[in-house]
Image (cartoon, rainbow, N blue to C red; front, side, top):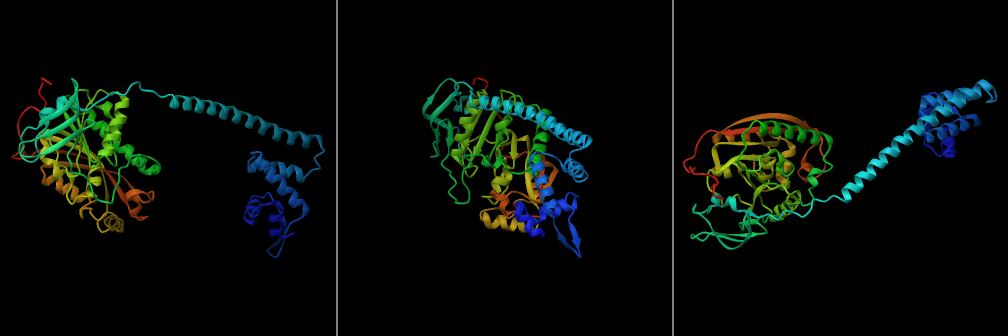
Length: 426
């Protein structure tokens, strides 16, 4: 019979038969390049397929087929050898079954643990009263007055912030809502945190390397009592899973253009009962109601990239007034080579995107112009990414660079105020 007939009779492809021929498991008659298969070949193929289902390796199948071909399977020594092959495989499979059963038992225990995961009663938090000395009107710089407040000894849960100049911001569920909302149509709240799942191993490795750099640098810093900002968390949110790296007496400021993102993360963080003081501000234009020169450390984990999708400036250019002299920025940044097709596609997908976006050279120049001394390390580069979010703009083969950077502020602006960040009375 021809190869097509054999393939059809045994329910396999011609390529499978050729594979077995190439490995010496099938040896048909050949005449001028044409192969003719006998009933014995069909019997051998059926034996191969049966043993493959029984988890035998190609080498084991070949040993058995050779014994079968060279005997009638009645000789005691041949039978003993075939039995040895079968018994060894049975022992091997039984050992694998035990391993798999232990694995299943472990998974079952993990499932029970996850299903019964409980953090007790969530900690109810709000605007930390400790943060009140930092609040200022972004229009005139005056102290803000808190009206109609619902509060306890530590937090303000609802109310309003007002200034005599007319500025107003609401406090809802302990989150400051300035009223500056993102009204564009090119983004939406990442409430399912999909950016953290199924992004590919190379991307995840780069992210973890950035995490490692940050952890090392944070370990070398004196963080007690510092004011720490992380903004633009609709993408990545470093602090969310790394609050334990910071002393309890830090004051954290977390901002995003979406109130919904802050509300979601606030509810998750409350489940952890971290006992951290976190000030949440929902504002799309970085017009924060904060005193100038109050921030010691800014975490910018892809935050500049996230901001540049919807603004022409780098984030540091718009928030530098709130940074202290001596302040530090640490984080990560994605970039493309100048003139890349990938960035052209980013500009089409995000028409509000800065022309200097995804440009590490421009990022360095802007930090220097704002009085910082940046140090930038290339962590890695990706030539293929997933077809999701901004990564669908990435052209396969073009490098997408992942950088870690740290920047120290050395130059003082005239508008910086010298006064204590947090009143000890609070």
